[in-house]
Length: 334
Image 1 (tube, rainbow, N blue to C red):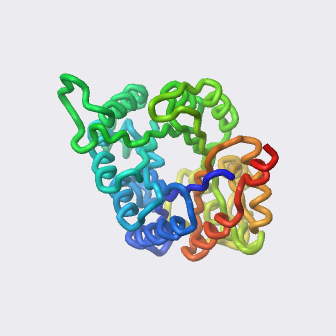
Image 2 (cartoon, rainbow, N blue to C red):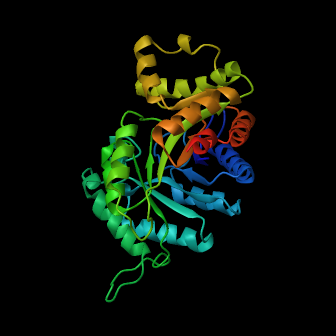
Image 3 (spheres, helix red, strand yellow):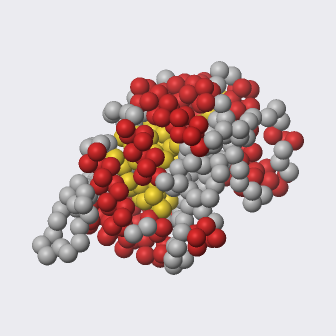
């Protein structure tokens, strides 16, 4: 069976506040911990009223303080937005407070629009230095070296596990070269998934952190008692991606009876392509879909995003998924 983990963008539903979203996040983290999920990640986004995880390390600390065993981390920190030293200090602090439970996933996208990037004082060329920044961060979290002038306090020697995130071949190549686990953002950008996984596995070089490759795929999963109910819940996410195509971002909208009345044909094509790795339906329907996905991709872990407007329905979706033993048939066949 593949491991199951959670990607929570801390969505702010229409009619709610970020405070409500944080309360839902705490509740969901405690819920999936009881269900046996492997890890719980939040992602860095800025200037988006429908996503409350901008201060990512603060949110991680909040989640970790209300859980006990589940790994908590970033999926991810957009490293070009930050000094590696500052991130080493932040995640060294988290690792000191919650030892053995912190993950640090790293991406090179800004996590926002150009104007917001400029407001963050971000160097527009910073992404070009991403590999060097990863190495610098890795060194700051590694053992203290002779004559080392600058160290992360706390952070030095804590070896917080690093992950490389990506939605193209670039991240796969870097993760393989550095011998780090790799997470592909197929939950919103699925096109290069198969090629990226093939490159990552073929070129992987063992490292101190990882002796073998470990590939994770992001997927959207929405489960309910019936296919029809799940498809209706899915319309919240479909509306969100349609709005992205329109260049509009807002709160997570409640489900609607017919998505066909919401999007135009060209919008449907673009939004549906981005949502290709979405698995929606009853437990029987989704198990078959996910088993086939795992068999095709060979991923070691699924990072599950479930943007569902109703909090109780979201809790139920993760509970239903935990019962499915995804990849069991694949493992038995092997």
